[in-house]
Amino acid sequence: MHKQLYTQLPKHLTPHLPTPDGKGLIFDIRQYSIHDGPGVRTTVFFKGCPLACRWCCNPESQAGQPELVWVRERCLGCDLCLTACPREALHAAAGGVKVIDPQRCDRCGQCAERCPGEALNLIGRWRSVDEVLAEVARDALYFEASGGGLTLSGGEPLAQADFAAELLRRYKQEDKGAHTAVETCGFVEWPVLERVGAHVDLFLYDIKHMDPAEHLRLTGRDNRLILDNARRLAAAGHGLVIRLPLIAGVNDPRDNLEATAEFARALPGVSRIDLLPYHRLGEPKYQRLGKDYALKGAPALASEAVGRARDILEAQGLEVAVGG
Image (cartoon, rainbow, N blue to C red; front, side, top):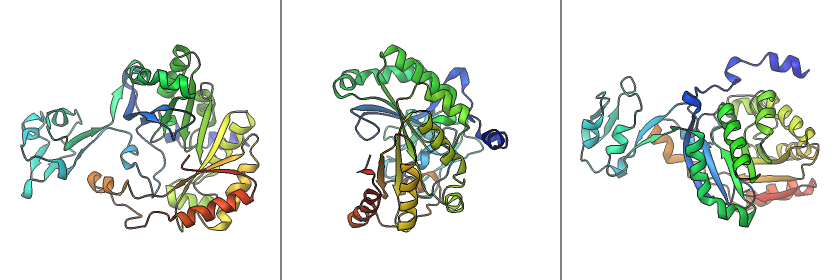
């Protein structure tokens, strides 16, 4: 069964981002995180994701290439960026609006480096393992005291599996086994997940919806591979926490919550679900990226709705944490 499933996967499921000189495409490194695994952690955000979730709060993480964005409210109107661009890919339109020509822009980032107001931002830079580990090392004392460590997030870190595996391997080796975690949507071939998993203590694993057709509508992919990989990880004895991004009217009906709980309970070693309530903090990012936001104007999830979902899951015998 598994062999047939994986030989039929489309080619884009292989690690799909180029890795020049063994580098990874990273769009953020966040120190002192307390929500991406146990203890105090450094979270490394990978760029590129095979899903396109309608509620994604990090739309800048989706494209598997660097992106240049202009933030109007930060612009000082100095126009220094226009002369900094070697390809003349920027020009000023009416009202001082900066327009980026995608045909000319090669995302070199020189305009962003020249911008004194940080109105221009290059999202995603190619980083070496050494460069990333040097930033992670700043938190080493906090890791030791709190039981924390390194978390890979995104985007989808397993879309850059070679870089992710090497980063985790080196971190484990050089930091004498400090804790590692990976946040993943699980949409990747099992051999890739298995290889990276050799260096992972905990998978923070998203289950967005239990119905394959609804999952396809909401994310652009169905969930059969995702659910199958969760079963395999649990059967192999990997540390696994199921996470449910909770969106009102999307995946919070009782039948979906109960189906999610039933699935989680059937996974060996899994006793916990993290609820991640929907919020609107990512909405302004879509406008800056020139993207439409499918949930525009949708309210953040009320505490009563979160409590109801928690009660339903706990009634199924699961430990529930809100916010991870």
